[in-house]
Every structure is written in C-alpha cells, then in structure tokens.
Length: 369
Image (cartoon, rainbow, N blue to C red; front, side, top):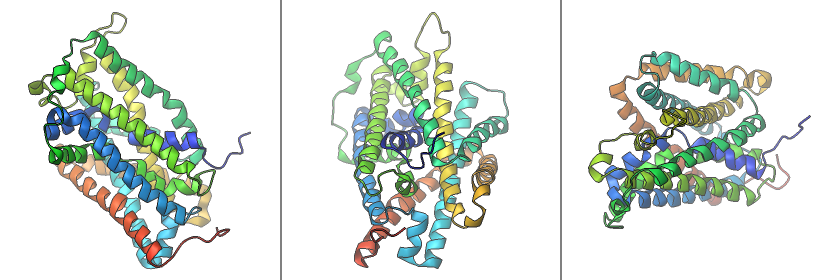
C-alpha cells in the first residue's frame, strides 16, 4: 500500500514538465521564427531565462507560506473579500486555459489525423480522459506523469532521425544574432506562452515533501531547463530543415519535418508522432483541471469526497462548452486574451503579493499550519 502524501523532487519535476509541454511544441518554431527569423532558437533561450526569473518570484512567494497554496495565502495578504475575488479569477484562468488547449489540440488532430470526425467527438475524448485523471489526488496524477514522460524521449529520437536522414542545411542558422535584441524579445514573447505550466507552483508548493526546501526550486528549474532545451532543439531542427521561405508558410513545422522522414517499417511516422503528442496534451488538460479543482475545493471543504470526482467533471464540461462556442475565426482573439490574462495571473499578481508580504511583514510563522 502506498501511503505517500507529498511530492518528491522527481515527481514535482515531471508534474511541471508535463504541464509545460503540450500544444505549443508543434507550432512554436513557426511562431517564433516569424518574429526573430534565424535567431528563433535564441528567442527560445531568452524565454527560458525570463521564465526562470518568474519561477524565482513564485518560489520566494511560496517560501513565505510553505504549507499553504495561493488560494489560502491570498486571503491573508489581501483580505477575505479581495482574496476570494482573486481566487475566483485563478479558477477562471485555469478553466479558460483548459478550453484553449482543447481547441488548438483538436484543430491539429482534425488537420492531421481525423479529418472527417466532428470536432466535438475529439474534444470529448480528450477532455474525458483528462477528467478521469484529474479526479485523483496530486500523488496519483504525478505518478502517471512520471511514467508517460518517457514518451518525450521518443519524440526527441524521431526528431534526431530527421537530422540524420533528411537533407538539412545548417547555413539557414546564419548569420547568427543579427535580428536584434528587440526581435529576440518579440520571439521570446511567442515562446513564453508555450512554456506556461510552471505557474502550477502556486498550488504545488504546499504539496512538496520538504516544506520550504530549496529542492523545490531545483526541481522546477530542472523542468524549465528541460523544456527550454527541448523547444530550442525542435526550433533549430525546423530552421535547418526548411528554407527561410518555406518555414514562414508551415504552421506546424515539427509535424512537417517528421512527415518527411521515411522508414520502411513505418509508413506514416507523423501519425505516430501525433499519437505520442496527444498524451502531452491530455496531461496539460489534466493539470489545469486540477488547478481549478484545487481552487474550488477551498470553497467547499466540507465535501472533500466529492472534490476529486465531481469538480473535474464540472470544469471539464464547462471547458468543452467554451471550446465548442468559440469559432475558428475567434480562436486567435481568444488566444491573445489568455496571454494577457497569464501576464496578470502568472507574473503581475505574484509579484504584487510578494511585495505586500515583505512590505507588511506577513508570512507563515514556523510551526503554523
């Protein structure tokens, strides 16, 4: 019998890793290249550095209240009414990101695999799997994430095979560092959204085995370095595979260069790639359902048994409805809205809360729970 109740460093690393790697991995090289051209890989590294800075802020904030999540210490720092409003905002943020992941993943699956399948069926299958997993506790979810993270290795192996077998041209990477720092930042802004998922620290800090330990920072940093490295590698492979004119008209360059790979034993290796990628989509959906579920559970503490079964279903259905209501031509505007929301809920509010905690010397006293 497994009596573990707290996350280990490895579990936390893979929890963040699986939340970060999702829909963005397929289109990130295209989106970043449009802003910073052949220096797109530099923009990805810059984005990783900026994300690490935000991770430091979240870690410092968590250290002030090591046994509480943001849904608890927000009321301590802002008061009951304002804190409750903020918590509702975070719950809504988790729900809207869930819907966004569902929309974009369904669009890609329809485009590459299930062309004639109604999108509501694809959405239902994705969200139903995520709801089933999200009803588990944090340990159950993290254990699944540790197991399925091995699939990322297969994604990388397939990409490496492209470098070995496909006619590539490393000259497409040159001249290096010529697009300028402003374009690097514009590209980093595009890459930033694909790296979201580290904000789960706001609720996972209190679930960590070593309360207040620097091991938390190390675990999340390892996840961020891994994601940045994977995205940077995928971006570089895309650049050397396609000419500058080609990559600007290929919205999912990762899938296109995988499709170009020819193996005698597998006719459509891109379908294998998509099948493995779907697992990462489901883990991202699960994480944000879990995020909203955790927030809502603080409003209904008296029905904890219902929390892990009913709430993920409710949020999953709501996310499905939102995804179906948003039309294809509205997806870009919806995406920009979520990006702006992430600036507020992932960067601005944590910085504000950290400043308030230092200014008014509010923190969790030793031994307090």
